[in-house]
Length: 206
Image (cartoon, rainbow, N blue to C red; front, side, top):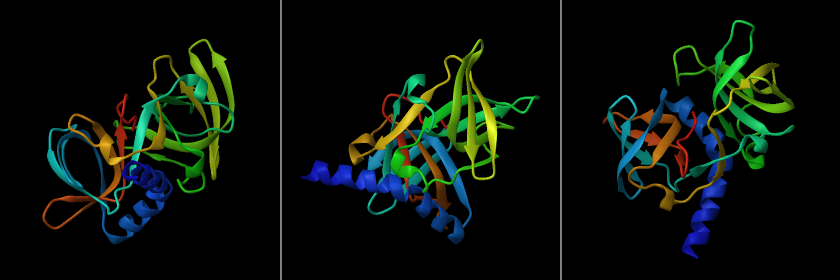
């Protein structure tokens, strides 16, 4: 029963992830966390960020956990709702360096949009629906459409691709890589996370 409950909470958390992030953003400036879990104490995680900082991350109650698993390129089809981490090219194409595939339940909850991104200097993030997909000599070419426009995306061979699945507390273990999209910094320096994505067999490609 406990396992079922955890899975149910994880599934519900996926649907609530974006809306919770919006609420947190209204309360205080937020930060993104990318790093590796070094300690787990209930709903409090010690995380070493990729820049080397030691962070204390407190999860919402109940924890909203999403797992990320490796996915093949074939999982990206017309109608898929995806997130594209990319570098803009001179011709306006977005050259992907990471892709994540949202669950159907996240459509309409996660905002479809194009924006600047902080994964790499000058990078972008496009959350959008795949309109067309065509194989090319230098990789897979996509046309993705979002609320205010569309982008051409090139997925070079070897680009890491992950998809969201419901997660559980068992996924949060020492050594696991995590991503928090909107953590609120508290007065004591700790971070409160409305949700968290954790890699199972792939680092969260954000």
